[in-house]
Image (cartoon, rainbow, N blue to C red; front, side):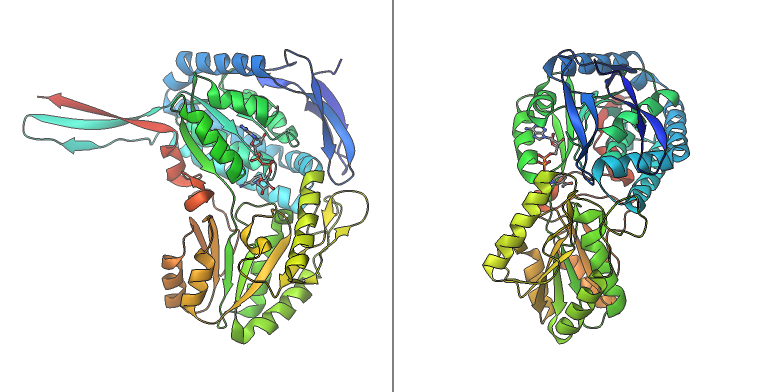
Length: 491
Ligand code: NAD
């Protein structure tokens, strides 16, 4: 029988106790069926630990706990009390930051530097949410001489939250932060292959004084646990981050019970370099845009567009700079890039290399696996691409970038917008007017000018088109977790 906590020594020597149970009603428990699933370290392909796997019965128990906590407790608390717990949770994340970053690197394969950045944003974001808890104001509306109206914002109830494997702890915070600040309770399902950091952090919720049942974490498959959350009549909202295909399926499933749905989905984001940009800086930005987090980023700048007069120069600089980026052991801090998160991801990425080559594109660097152990891929640049190639159209979710040539602003705007997605876009130029003009014309929820993948807890993030519905972070995220009540009164 698997114990509910197992001792683990992380690759950097830190020792800790990893919870293996489902976190329901403030306790770690075995799943009803008692089945377990193995969690693998993607940089060694070795077993880290088995954990308990949730099924339908566990979903029902977790939802019941969250429902009880919503009505009896959390939604009724003074907003200041909710804020206090969230501030405390942010402090605890900070106090445990090196441990959490290390767990994340072992479980997901990302470099320790990347994980540290994630954990830093987790605590900042939880603090930002805590600050909003007592500022959820409504409006007073003038409706005439002898009556008036005002609005209040109320929580939704139990929220089902389904997160992916590329930013396990960060996505946990983007989901629970605004939900809890606004008085909702949650049942969250981590991705199958990266459950460890969310389980560990859930015990910090308890330590922070968040009442039992407010946060429930149930690792399990998308097909069973994810699907059950989307169908459950007591769940009022589904918040999902992941692929567009699964997002579409979730929306259809949630429609039967008219759940509110927010989706943060895929992308194929353009990153545009104009001839008047600071080219050395632009090259570093476009490399960070695609290779950061091993390319497993929904808003990765995976389509680079370079103005024709500097195309060859940028290509050469980009190749040279990319070849300085080391790939390997996530705990070796000289490595920029760690492992891909799963064997499936590794195969998918290597398949796209074959597809791109067959389509006639030219690999100018990378294009292969690194080593035989662990799911490592060299940062890869494809040049001589055509806009209708699969490698330009489809989300690869790995360290693979295509580089295309353009001559005019109109041409690049049309190329950049020729996508079903619209998550992010980058513009590199010294011309402020051009930057604003192009940003106005691009179909994307986030535009980065002379930077890329620059996140801030108070800046909303989310997609146009098939990249999603709703916004995360900033004040906009709070709207996704509240409903407006209008009260009209005669005097
Ligand atoms: P996915 O969208 O299938 O999985 C994301 C989450 O959804 C996981 O927790 C999964 O268990 C859950 N899920 C899966 N099927 C479900 C269902 N029927 N009902 C409810 N929940 C369900 O992504 P994946 O299969 O792990 O990865 C496939 C591709 O998705 C990747 O290669 C990448 O292109 C994309 N992706 C995008 C993001 C993003 O942040 N936009 C994140 C992860 C993956």
